Length: 577
Image (tube, rainbow, N blue to C red; front, side):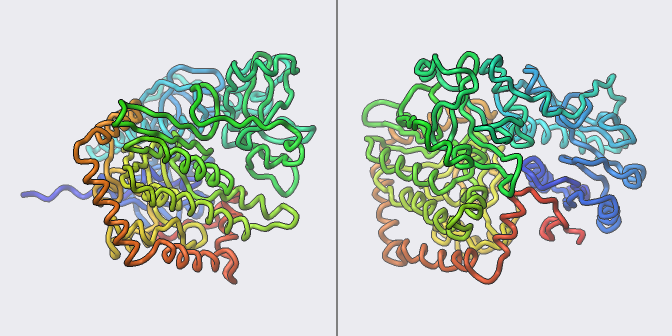
């Protein structure tokens, strides 16, 4: 029998190792290719990486600069562009979201002297959702990028060395703040949301709150029922607070503004809106919302129940922006879990956000503490890790019904281990997991990982996984036993399929026996080594990370929050170094 042909040597050149780059990195490795990463720092570093690695081709999934001519003139360089063939410019997806384009796409094209104008190797189209730029990028764009990249590589492996001539170009200039600007006196809710969504994450919409310049992002529509209370308020008025988010009047309704970045001063990083303007927001009325409520009433936490009596399924959703779980978010999630586990349900689903299940402690909220009088980042780190540990403990000790974590989006660091606190973990195949902490200044980590990980992978498997520091596809995680089920169907309908799977479990005749076995296992584990001991030992190491002499965590966190450019490529990614 002939052995399979060796894969390609592929150099991934990227501005940062973002979600798209991680997915492609993991997919290419799973397809048998040898992949090395170089962060795009300058032309000489890129040239050196090519000289050292000697790749068959270079793949650029996320760049903010041109590939140097000294590289693309002698090596096939393929660029993954988030737009259909012929689309050119650095703000392709921004314009598509702002203009409400119904269909968009991703193109793999060959780098040449013109910007986004080289020969086309592959392209795919997708329908646009009413969603933020970041959400579309992490879901539809990423899935299409995987599809077209694999198609382009197949052509390359078949011996092709150039693509097809591109269609006539449509140049879209870099979007300016003037293009995104909101006029609160005339813009409708739909128009405001389009502006916020096309700027989500970066750069935000330049505006002002309480007379202070800031960038707005993370917008959500307010319900008509809620806005009836505020019909007399003038457009642009700030009305109320919920979950740290500010409600602002539009011409015909209202929007919740989740995050802001101050335009001036040391605190020029993204923060929860009401925390960035804590003094001013404190004067606004608070509008908390119940867990069970109409679908159009926005809130970070939501609970629903499904199924017949005696075979009930409960679903607790928590949708935290970018998966960041600050101290107060953890406390609210913890309180919600304690409430819903008193409900008469057989299966309880812990369903994270659409884009991220969880990424663990909130580094931006921790950085904000460094700018508060009488507080500091170490203290907030300590409060945050204790709060997320409380959530994990509550899930682990819920033994009188089956608990399931549902990964609709990616999970990283403490968020990945929070998912493992449930009895089962189900994920969609588009999910990428980063079940490790070391990339953030060599953090040790907590969330009871020293209990949760070995019970799935064994002691040796747990050590190996924590040491490798690389992204993991959901199907790889299922194969090794880290998660229990990987859904390989379309992303649309994933939640409904999980609900049907949960309803079947709730009605299964052997559920009582299974729960009894799980309770016996938990009691045995507790007698061998109490959960309190796991937590104590993990936190001893975390205390050193937060308060010890080695500042690596604080330096890494500061660089991450302030999006400082990379000075080098991490060695675990750069095989050629």
